[in-house]
Amino acid sequence: MSGAASSTPASGEIRRRIIARGRIPFAEFMALALYHAEHGYYTRPGATTGPRGDYSTSSDVSPAFGRRLAVQAGEVASRLGEGPWRLVELGPGRGLAAIDMLDGLDRYAPDERSRLLEVVLIEPSDSLAAAQVARIAAAHPEVRVVRHRSLAQLPDSSVRGFVLANEVLDALPVHTVIRRREGLAESYVTTGESGQLLLCEGPLSDRRLGTLVERYRLCRRPGERAEISLELEPLIAELARAVAAGSALFIDYGLDAEQLADETRAARGTLVAYYRHRVEDDLLARAGEQDLTAHVNWTHFDDAALAAGWQIAGRTSQDKLLLALGLMDDLLARPGRRTAREEMRRLAARALIMPGSGAGKRFQASLLVKQIGADLRGLRPIT
Image (cartoon, rainbow, N blue to C red; front, side):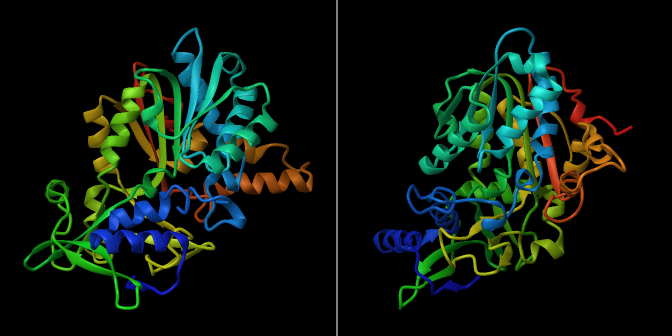
């Protein structure tokens, strides 16, 4: 975690900012490394997931992921009554989830599919957005696809429908706070004598960090650390502003505040880098060319949702969500008579509820609702 000798376009931009302004909070480094308009990890041309990327999402693992989420989207659309509705996705990646959800709506909710007005993609990267739109258009040329760079571009109360945010929260820039004997400190990024990026410590850059540390009882003992996103609350509030009625599904890995404050976990924190499907300890290396991610504080998320006017329908693990939405039908289809291709698809769908690349119990799914009932199928007990 100490420093980075390699040079990348993003690290050059970061160095120039440090030279001009002095050390920057780690959250600012993370924002530049991931979201710089030209050189950010998620915004650079050619950014991808799956075998050719640095990590795999559930949509990379199996199309059954999106198709079963379509069952939940269809239920939400049916509760909105007659009239058009929108399917919105934050951080659409390669566009696979949108395609699979459209396939699922065709199969499991054809009446609701006929009323779908458009698919809305919230994607800051121009190059990724172009690829997403092209991929969706090739699979579903009849569907209108609209792209916005941010939630801020959605008009107030313009969305009646279903919102998906899969592995979005874990990539929000985070401030790293450490408890020292003399009080709280924060991690900053600076440069060494030879220009290498280095971590150092300084006072808190924002007083809200101290407030959140105390509220969630984080960093209670000297040496303990915690990651705090100051962008979480604005994101949830901005989404609430845009959604008049419907549901938002957030899927990510994370823990409640009490679990994050556990002595063993707090000793190291949860912030890691991913490069070529390996966990990397050097967070400053390959800026813009490796993923950076931290566990979601679900207690903070719940508080932010309630404050923004959402109703929390509930939270469950990804395996239980998908099984409640009918994934078992995919696992049991055509027993004893499967082709090799069908068996491969079945095993891929099975991976979605197992430990490892499919996330299984490690990923949590939180459903928020507005103006519809909270008893959603994905949260019901599996019978």
